[in-house]
Length: 168
Image (cartoon, rainbow, N blue to C red; front, side, top):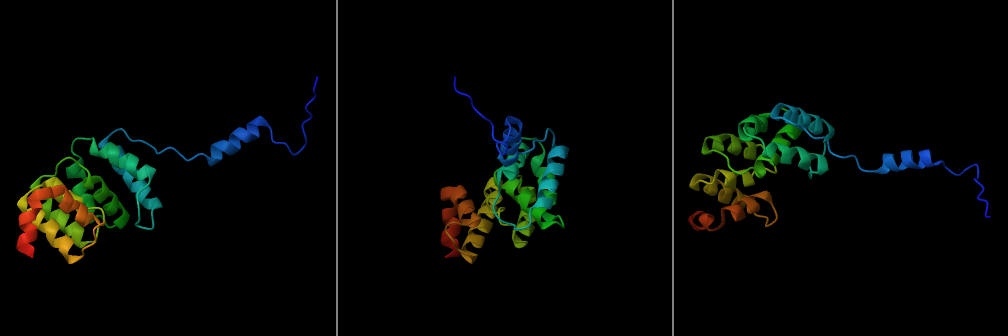
């Protein structure tokens, strides 16, 4: 038979398993109710500092929140949070909710005035002519075909055409 000799510098199976476990990407934590998900959102915000893109953990908590009743009423006040990262994450959640009541338009405007980068598509979730006008106004103020304002106008579709013509 063939004998396999272990060298002293060869890691054991247990050591290899530990090493692989440390290099595997961590699975995003989940939350089961609105309160727990808001706590998770705040915890994620504490780890963010660049104000940039969203990753797996942000997507996971946003998806969970978007599926929960009462999420809009819970997220809108967070747009004014003193921690801008909390506000950005709330904006990210609102960006893709199914619908936002028009009574939240003033808070959405205030968040946009605060330069919350993910928030403009929330205007389309309100869906009113006034919200469409706001989306067009903001798009024309800083036109960039790849920005969130452009996406908001795209979500409005042909309903935004009269607002674009009026603004011209």
